[in-house]
Image 1 (tube, rainbow, N blue to C red):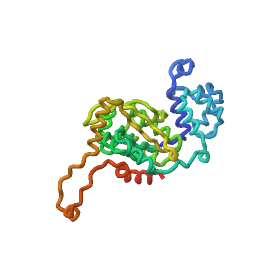
Image 2 (cartoon, rainbow, N blue to C red):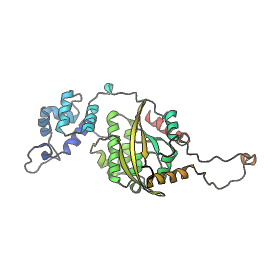
Image 3 (tube, rainbow, N blue to C red):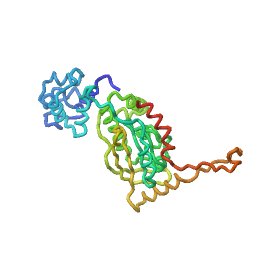
Image 4 (cartoon, rainbow, N blue to C red):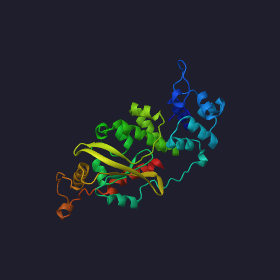
Amino acid sequence: MSNGTPLGDFLRARREALKPHDVGLPEYGRRRVPGLRREEVALLAGVSSDYYIRLEQGRESSPSAQVVEAVALALKLDAEAADHLNRLCLTASQRPRDWGEAEVSQQLLQLMDGWEHTPAFVVGPALDIMAGNSLATALHSGFDHFDNLARMVFIDPAGREFYQEWERAAHSCVAEIRAAYGHDPESARIAEVVAELSAQSEEFAALWKMHEVKGKSQEGKHLKHPEVGDLNIKFAAFTVNGAPHQQLVVYQAEPASPTAAAFETLRAMAIAPKQATPAEPTEATATGSTQATATGSTQAQAAAPVADLAGKEQ
């Protein structure tokens, strides 16, 4: 994803995003580089210029905890970005490799199936949709594919209409993938998704270079479904025990609100039998066998994509 090192790329991007007045330094004349100079960051962090230059160039990959903290303060990193910096400083042997099962557990699938009035789905590190209940599928029915949140935001034509605060959703998606990248810079699946979206979306490529870091958190969303209209939802994400690379995403509506009523409409659409055009009689119909209906079962809908994504992430 870059010719540099993950640590060096992150430090360079965050240094270039700062102006001298952001850190209390005077600014004289025209500057030849965007943001702060390496020497200025070194001064603020209390390290030599040569040492800091080695950090950005990847020639010093194991700084002490004190140096990492000093650099984080110099670059005005918030808590999440500072944690990300610490993870990038870990060696390959120090990184946890056992992230749990690649597939969504049957217990979690059954739990989501039981939430008939609540859209819920599970995402992987690259924001792949690993499983979702019937209401989540109905909620995203305007998209070509309910398969990857970042692709849906940046590539699918429905994204800009569905996400009413599109820029916020775009920044959030990229920052979440960047946070996951910090846990596993060698992830083949993250590299694949980043390469694909960077090639197809200049906006994604520009945001990825900014190295913003932010995990999923509880917040509100303003969405617009093509059939039920505006939706104001509460959103929360939970790490899955035994599979910390998975996150359970849950959307909720205020009781007795227009969004709650819209969810009920979507629920009815999800459980209604599919109206298929009758084909020629088969042996099954001749013997009185009933046609299968679309029950919206999470297991049925998620089985193929889960197997697909599990193969990609292993």
